[in-house]
Image (cartoon, rainbow, N blue to C red):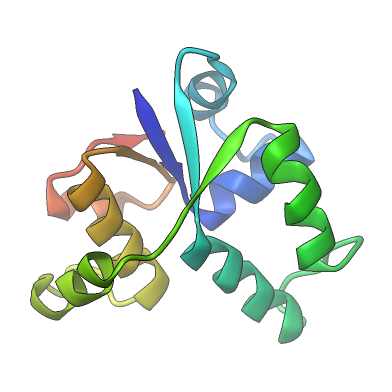
Length: 128
C-alpha cells in the first residue's frame, strides 16, 4: 500500500509522539508500504514554523532534508493536475493544504495517514 502522510502524522511520527495512533504508526513502519510526503506538507510545516505556530528544534529545511530520506519516505511533487483538481473539489474541507492532499490522494490512488476525519467525506482511504 502507498501512504500519503499529512503534516501532523509526519511530525508526530518523527517525534515519536503518542498522539500518532498505533495503527498509523504501524502502517508507517511497515516496510511493505511506500510512504509519501507531499511538497505541500513541507510547505505547510514551513509556514507554521515561520509564523511561530510550530516550534521545531532546527530549521524546517534541515529537519526534512535529513528525516525524509532517513525514514525512506519519498517526496510527492505537486503536479498541474493535482493543483487544478482543487477547482472542482467539493468544500468538505476548507484547509488548502489538506484539500491539495485530497487531490493528490485521489489522483495517485493512495491512502492518507491523518487524524482528520474530514478526509473521509472525499471517499479516500484514511489510515488512523
